[in-house]
Image (cartoon, rainbow, N blue to C red):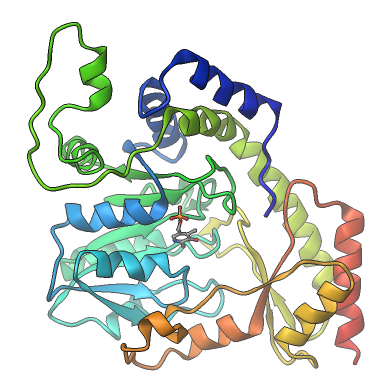
Length: 370
Ligand SMILES: *Cc1c(COP(=O)(O)O)cnc(C)c1O
């Protein structure tokens, strides 16, 4: 992933600095409103990262020790870590092969009487089945949190991914489609939840520092609960506003490049390229291919691509295989383990050319005949 940053972002950051508002201020407020509108409504609460956004979502839900939260092991490790931040227990569920996502069945297989929430990830931008998971979560009486870190611009059932949320967390890390350097957003349906989240990100204060400084009257704030400093800066939000304006064009370009990859890869035996699920469209945040009877192992494929100047990456990680989770003994996760070991992510960014794609798929075609 190469971030699409240019002169406009540099100018916006410079303007923020010259304005004197560098901490959370009017640009953050605008970015919250515009981002929430772009991803299907609700209220936006800007935070310092998706990870801190997930943490606040679980604080908002009141989760703590003794509570279980079902997460996919197949995800960036922050998804599971957020559960531990509140002292709750992450319980790993398997995913389906076609999308890499949790399903009603894989969640149900690990659900217990202590399950209080599910964090479902839109895997690499591929939307999970929002309608099926929403209904199941409601039937079970458990909260559904969307880890939408990779999902800006993805669609499910004709609506933006994340819109089904009670609550969704987004990332603006440079590896995602749009970036603010570091940064994140929580979107929530209820105004009361947004108010509480704004308090939680800012030391539990009943009035934001931005509002206090803007007021003509002296305002004495109160600290209503023990909370955090998870604020975004106005410099970041200035960059984010410019980036947001590029989102739909970026998604369109990625989808065209992905379609071209799919047709170039179609006649190579032993490779399955990620595609849209029946109910939606991915933004192709990650374009991954699964080896399925390919004659060469995944790590060798990566090494050969590297030798030919192509920086592909391993597929999505599995948290339960990492030392940080060595103390957890999950149930069987065969699909998770298969995807993490036998998939790779091909380069897909705004500077990728058709010649690059021909070269990359050429290396794979040659390997397929070994
Ligand atoms: C990138 C990512 C995160 C973490 O995002 P940050 O903004 O870097 O904290 C969390 N979950 C998933 C699925 C991600 O891909």
